[in-house]
Image 1 (cartoon, one colour):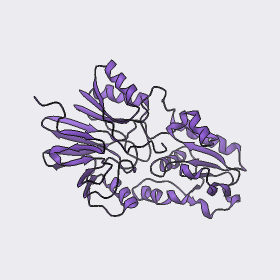
Image 2 (cartoon, rainbow, N blue to C red):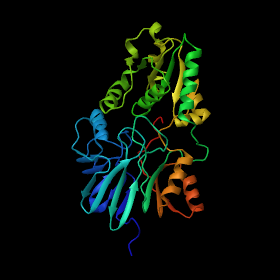
Image 3 (cartoon, rainbow, N blue to C red):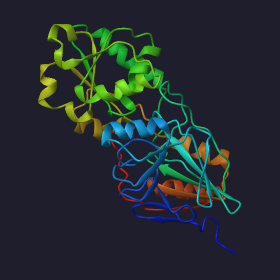
Image 4 (cartoon, rainbow, N blue to C red):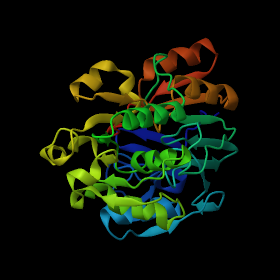
Length: 332
């Protein structure tokens, strides 16, 4: 009798689905690729043909140029060889998807990166019962329990309002995090213009083109120091301590990331206001998802595998780590 999931083979550069002759999130160019979402550690250019959601394909085109694209909307079933493939919301960023594959009476779900808490910029995670759940574990340690996002936004606004002569400059990953912060601030009633670094502009425009309203956004580079007082400025994390930020009016340096739970990381970046806002599942979300799905097996692609492997053993779920290469923490 064949081993469960024997038709799926993990390699360092990705997950090969043999009866579909396709790879999931490969780190190298392949003839046929299934892509969960647009972050650069999962979506790369140069593939012969790419299956992904229309939003993910738009992000890939924005970053890598035209793709040989096969768009698949949420819930649409695509037949690839002997495998039925569908894309289901993952709640990570715009267009992010879990990849559901059915073959030989088995169902395998590749989560990609995901989170369970609400996000106004993308469709929420949908749990899909399965035999094998292939999951991330970026924050797979019990110490990582993310606070309420609204509370973190309130902290940001309180600091802004207490310092009207200064601005708050927030380091935020260009895809997903920046747009989510803007949308979350709008949800808290912040109607002022939000200023952005030029590196964020095209992706903010793409989000709006796909129906995500962000309100008034202005380029920070063309604004005077006086105009920026009492305002929020977003930039990539790498620009926080760059000479670009020196033109800002006595900035309060903030960063939005799940890693801001680790004080040393905040200190290393000279962050005055660490905001714990993540687009990845925290420990409770990871374990809640496994309890909800109750798969026969859990395969862990990347992150803090050991603690999640131990949790699975305690809950009589067979688990293995895949040791895929090329997946990064980004600046989540």
